[in-house]
Length: 96
Image (cartoon, rainbow, N blue to C red):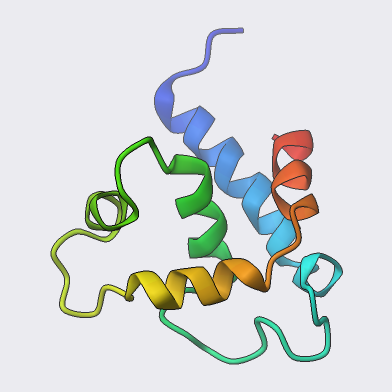
């Protein structure tokens, strides 16, 4: 079966949604991490980490979020990343 880019993208987002639906399993502190609404949701964080290339974090953030005044800071990204267990990305790839 040949898949086009949109089908692959949809499968990826489905895998991310699967992990995000039970994010407490993949959070360092399940009772508090990813509970409040932030600029970097668990879904955005995982998508960013998977799509990140080899450029600097700032360049990768601009590529991902664009030149948006609401783009999070590199520090905010680092803080959110620290809340996510590595198993979250493993689960996305397994489900994908």
